[in-house]
Image (cartoon, rainbow, N blue to C red; front, side):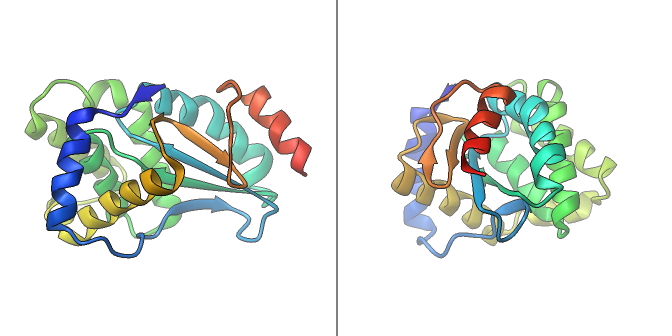
Length: 197
């Protein structure tokens, strides 16, 4: 798991002064709206363990539970750095839930290509390239990155998660509001789900 970056914590504290805390933005979700089980995953888009979870566990969850509506899955943004924050904002630029999940998948699959280096302009350019292949225009993405509301929603979601769930690393997984402490392997997560069905 990736530990929360101390410098980014300081930035969030300063941003909290600039952006007053408001209601949490719409969480990206998939599966049965009234499902008996809700899985919440708090993740940062630059976190390799989060990418591993999404690429190797989420797709199995989708096929076996989400597509059947027996489980609800929620992606909660918990950016650990500016690159993750910007990528999350571009995902929110999509106004279609299914397309947002498709873009989320592409962002994770191509993480090793875009989430490298320290030049945020180069990183943003790489994120824009992924967004463009998923139907977003450059002008639209630029507008989203400059939209204070998008940034505020993502940061407030992270702050609220920190306050409520005491997130100390990513990914952090909750099943029906209980923290999952098992291995980040599909077979282990499946056992926990099946116990509750």
